[in-house]
Image (cartoon, rainbow, N blue to C red; front, side):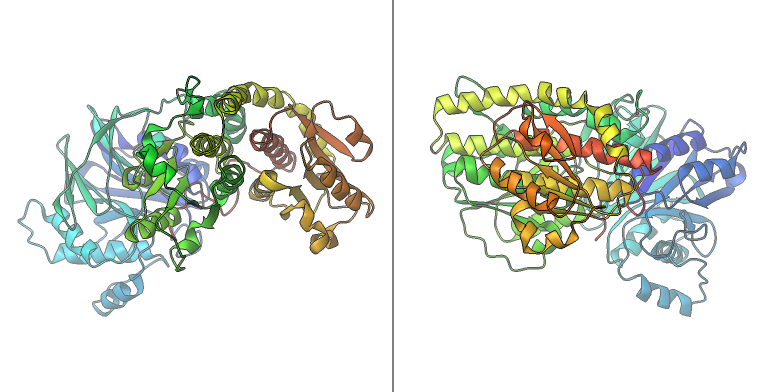
Amino acid sequence: MCGIVAYLGDKEAQPLLISGLRLLEYRGYDSSGIAILGPQNNLKIVKRKGKIRDLEKYIGDRHFPGHLGISHTRWATHGVPSDINSHPHTDQSGKLALVHNGVIENYATLKERLTKQGHKFKSQTDTEVLAHWIGHIYEQTDPNDPDRLEKAIKKALIEVTGTFGLAVIHADHPNCLIGARRGSPLILGISEEGHFLASDVPAIAAHVQKVVYLNDDDIVRIQDHQFHISSLTRGESKFEISQVEITDAEASKGNFPHYMLKEIFEQPQAIMNAFRGRLHHEAATPKLGGLNLTPQEMRSVRRILFLACGSARHAAMVGESLLETIAHIPAEVDFSSEFRYRNTPLDENTLCFVISQSGETIDSLNAMREAQRKGFRVLGICNRVGSTIARESNGGVYMHSGPEMAVAATKSFTAQVMITLLLAIIFGRMRHISATQGQEMLEAIEKVPQQIAKILEKSEEIKDIAKRYLKSKSMLFLGRQALYPVALEGALKMKEITYIPCEGLPCAELKHGFIALVDKKTPSIILAPTDSLYEKNISSIQEIKARQGPVIAITTEGNKSIRSLVDDVITIPQAPEYITPMLAVVPLQLFAYHTAILTNCDPDKPRNLAKSVTVE
């Protein structure tokens, strides 16, 4: 979950590292630091608790010359956020420095061995132990061997248990940068003026034309404007060089004050990208070639299992409802983090989907590998081309949403819902949906970007509503059927960026305990479009109002009758029920965003959270 940027080339390293960290801060902002190897092989390390701006303020006008450096922004695992626990860490000699994303599970055993040999540790981190361990092996390696550093790192990592994406430099090797990965993402960036290592492409997109997504157990040595990739376990490693698809403009905020708001407003385009080129009107069905399934294989599917975490899991829950309603296929959603450790019964006709925006979510990656180990086909729904899940899955669908930099997912959620809808229609057309029905559904899909754009015009109106509930100590979000996971998503957005305790629940469950939370100070946000369950939702509203609870209703345009029953109304365009989840979530995203801004919370950097969960 931490962020790494490293560089070796013709340019000065310091400004490249700092700018890269700014673009990676969504991966962690407990602390940050840089290490640069300068003239006379002098290793200069500066690190600071807090956000990147705290590091920049501490550095001030100081310039650290050097063309080789590593940097890190931290999300704390071992050891509280502090200057001393910040990365980079050094070995016992002080000549080796490294930055690390991941968890070293056997660090206590290694630390005990090193302590007996006289090693002294300054921090509470597993990463410092790793630095000392590599340094210890380095001291035992032939000093005349030109590959001494790489061989020492390989030998050291073979005895390491856990996950790592790391970058290492050494004062005795001023023209060498080494990276390695297992479980945590690491990318090699290639340019004519130097090479980079980074946890994510946006950090280096402005400086490189090509990238290599390293595989698990890969180790890369950058030296003399060249690179060499091998494996800790397999000798030589197979890799592909890919073109960078992210532009500098896509990775910036543009004219928006925050990434989150920018990404909320990018949803019309993100939705369009999710279905662009995939709607075949002549056949009245979507087509997703990346599924790698024949029509016969698709017809044999009797059950679908979604594996996901967080917002992706909520999108999967919408997909569950859509698949059962449209395609009449039993579907189920499981926590990726639980699936791996539970003996879940799966029959041979089960098709698995793993959903992850980053394609690097460690729980989802491990769940996918567990299902594959049991012989099941697992397809991925990812945003990042070249990500581990995209490479290791048995096929899948790219979202094509562009980079999502804010920690709180917005455009990725709606894009994931759109893709599950495409899947539901594909399976439905193969079973019982007529061509006429299929064509109507495709036409409804094509209207979604314009409908979301219309909702976005209500941003200031939603801001005014948010102002009236700033003193709320808790909130309830309610919905039914496919809108229940949208309620969960709305509650999650509010919790993530405002820290207000929220509950998402099905309306019908209100009487089964949750109604005890209703009072004058607890607003209920209820998703009540004029659909088949509208009257049921009205009953829930009346139950809340009977107990003096304030109600904000998300309903369909033209519904005037509801205004006399609730305190505030936000409308969304009229649409089929299978489209409504993508529309209904947008007001909830804006409501959470404006509440965060009005309460002086930073929506891009919520406390304790990082964008991509790459450690268990």
